[in-house]
Image 1 (tube, rainbow, N blue to C red):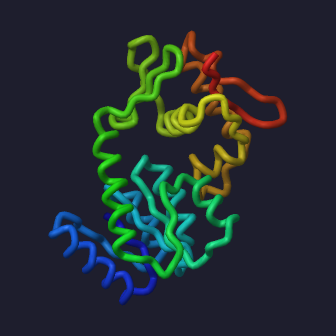
Image 2 (cartoon, rainbow, N blue to C red; image 1 turned 180 degrees about the vertical axis):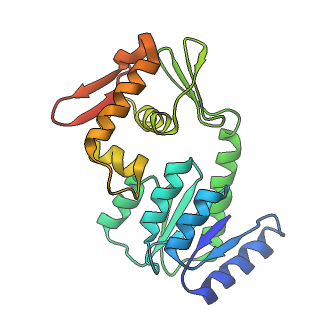
Image 3 (tube, rainbow, N blue to C red; image 1 turned 90 degrees about the vertical axis):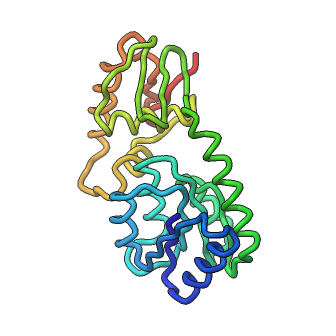
Length: 222
């Protein structure tokens, strides 16, 4: 588990409690800086991430973007910012749960174990199917009509994003935010180019990716 918290004393106390309560079954890595956390999640795989929002360097929301760019690791956000706008923003970025500080450790432990149990069940080949398209999140693979196709990483991430919420329209800015994260030099026209390549790769299922003029893209279930 990754624990990103800038107050080292608090992070150590949380690690000690969770390790003891779970009889050593949780291996917890503590990071106190947002930029370091982003670099770390790009190089390592975790079963769960626990993120403070207010950090030196990048924010916890920025770390969450990096986690989501890589995969579906469950994330719990911790923050003293309890207003609805921040809560909804965290969920919109892909947080699985949200806790307001000061955190009750027994409640945190219960949430962690619930998410880990759910993730263990989902690891049995998590499939998303829309028409003839099957996306296997566990294996990071895509099939069309039973035949596996090779997708570059960006096309795969765009397809996974669209398929995660069928029929929802994603703006170009939202796709950039979720797929390219911190590369601010990328323009929204790059999204159009990758969508074009993705449609070509999907063959006869290409028509499922719809352009909503003035709004963005979606994948259609019809």
